Length: 230
Length: 360
Image 1 (cartoon, rainbow over the protein chains, first blue to last red):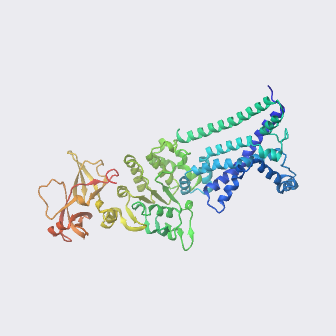
Image 2 (image 1 turned 120 degrees about the vertical axis):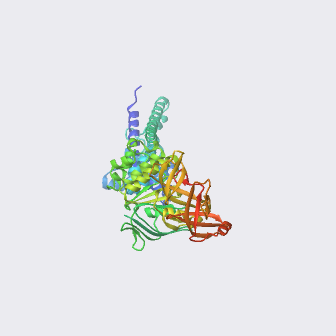
């Protein structure tokens, strides 16, 4: 029972896209989560709504907006094409962009919960010991939210693995180039009597997601054990 | 080293207006909850900005409203010990102690090895705060604050929330810090016994204002403070020295040129103890009685008589440089014809030793 090269390509691309999606959105997600949980400023609610838009819009609509902005005649696409000679639409990196945008609200929510659970009195204590606010963030706040960061990253990874609507709208479904696992499953479903390949891919997709969740749970519990017992 | 504070702050309908000065040693900031103690601490620490006034540490101005000087909290050089310790839960004790040296104020008021030794922390250096007892946490917090090279130290109710056993465990360390580190310490508390035992000076806060300030024993024994804190608790706080543990289970104390006899107390010979004598536990006589069961009879002079609105009166008696305050009825006052300067005898029915577990 050997996997076809199309399936292998789809699996590798999905993993690649999901990893890059998490890598690119982690820092902005930390920043936005911090700002939303700690700062009081005018337009905070507006920012909150904007971050959550991909969660409530139909994914196809998000993909359509991405296409409008990033195709060669779109606002950003034209800029990238003229100055860097890069086209994101119909390119695997476009799939990263779509996955990152779709998973961003989930990551922000998870990380924000982490920030809200940190006792800000500890930060005051560090401040009284002479540390500045940036150092306090790095040495106190960030280490204390590592479990939330792991949760956020795993949620983002899983969401990216499963992203379909925005991806297929934005970068289409080109085997070997932009075809992720969900797009491949979709393609196989179109072919009559292909239940076996479809099911196989579905199972693989399940395995990868459950595996990621398991690793994150192990990491998080090991961390919290280190903090509370030992 | 010293700190001078003269600040005003209005928060809602609460108004804080204080002026005081604290030198080397412990100055207690004392008052019931709601008196403005935490507001005052936050203002001095730099977490809240005063409306007007100044704060000076030695000669350095850290806040001045007119010149718009407002040194940020992390640059003020104020070490903190909080009621809830606030140790960093993800760092071992050792890293907690070294935090300021790595990431904050570096300095050499005291060395790491010295602090570990005097606070007896060697055994717990590699433990995480989650596994420490309340007393151990506070010891680490004290060490961490001392290692941050503070110009002054603020202890914000460090014993509140600890049970009596743990309090007794931490108090000697606080006394050691007071006696060996030459910095001003502000000790925020609402406990009379802690304040009596630890502080030389006291600032009594009430509703955002300073009611009294001065020597702790005198101020706490004063009528005006008792009137605010509750006359039921009106007491005299005095210092005495343990002179003998007698074989019949009585401890003898030197006090004001005479002796006091107490049921055995747990203190070493020659050590100082603080006594609390409730005003209602003192009986007065004009002549020295001959045969009486009370052991403790002191001779003194009436130096103050205050008539209350009800049937009671407060009589202050000077005994060898100390002051005892007693409550008697106005009827007895008239019957005995007590006058200012008159010699009298005070019988002490009960004397409490002000370790933290006897009075609160």
